[in-house]
Length: 413
Image (cartoon, rainbow, N blue to C red; front, side, top):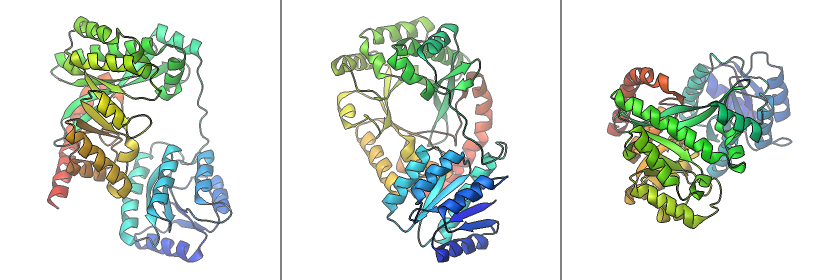
């Protein structure tokens, strides 16, 4: 593994290099200037696997350096190191994550050997995942933009497809259900993620048509799984704009009856990404959905508009903790406090709890011990086409047993 240490203090730089050497890592470059480090990165033919970056540096500080890593298209691991308060380090980590950099953690100076060892365990896992992904330093691909006409054509021609991400019990790893994640199978651009077209659908008044297509396909699929002996609940995301039509609950109920799917097999995930245009109508619709025995989940709790007011006003069944708090929660004291508070609140309100964005076994163990009910994230599986689920179930059994054993050892320890 090739590494780059960036720190303007020569002593701290030298110390970290020596600590890495004690762990068996001697292919380490050291730079005392962020600008010089960027030149090194841009010239490396085979890339750098891991960067340790100080936050407080003259000339170009660590935040500016992170921004430049994004421009370079850096895909290796990143560790932020600083003598600053933990809150500042955590905020810098969050910023880098939002830039879609692979942040493996933060460390406070002076760096302990134990903390460094834990970081390197995560770094090795990240490097393994990238073995088939090509060079670590490459130009960032341009993300196409799509207009209303293209999206309308996609809806009319059936180019939108559903992918499904498993949700499993943290107690024993049992598969409980799936979340439906829509994709656009674009004839030229390949698989397009929803963040590139959902806002277009909302602004153009196409979100209702899109949601109905996603719902129908998801319910047809859950009926098929049920017929095969897999009794799963399927979750579907709905927009605030779906909650503007008072007949929305009736249309869903009619679809359930048509496809022969029980209402208990459907969970609607509500994300208030846009302000309610008519709060009274939205409350009317959500309450009627619950009367019809359709479950409701408050998605991305703790972010955006998701709030205590929603929990007070709307009869939710489930609370989903946003992945930005879940990733790395086992070693982030501030995220841990937020997650524990959210879990305690949900438990007192009688809500099932789901942690999304679970990526590390350590986070799985923490969530299990904290009393979270359900896990979802890349540690379990990425979103997949429906036809891949049965094959995943077979391979999951071994992984499930392994995680259960790790969880039991953690509880006993």
